[in-house]
Image (cartoon, rainbow, N blue to C red; front, side):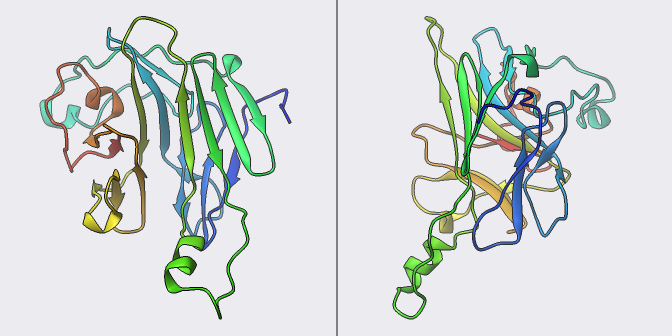
Length: 220
């Protein structure tokens, strides 16, 4: 189904947890959360950065006039430029277990887990844990037809503290978590985790913070 109006929230619920990854409505700041009865307050930022520093993003956030960093430096500073996509240019394909939001240059696809569960009487503990892993897979695909090098990114923004994934996350995974309750991970080769006051500041050409655990905007 390709809805005429692509701007609406959809709940993508993982198996094994009372939780939801909620996204899709333009200019509304929502993201995943456990044990909630509605969309969770936060932001999803997914897109790419061009060599001039401009951020091209799907419109799943509200623009912020100020950064939390202003409290520490006492003034507003210049951040990365943003050339944000408008919802009118977004196409959406909404299927039973696949929600794909597309711009000409990229796709963001969320997959709702809906497979069968193994028999607990005969399955191994590892198989049961894998089948009931409380996660929602997502994929970002880029179509770069230019000669420029783009930097793709996925990030979240929420009023909580974040830390890097620990060794228990598994080899080849990078990402961040918040108090062992929610988080994200990527197995993309070469991906690196950042945590900062905002996505704009994390991806600014002159950014030096990298992993700033007092920030509330993690991504990779």
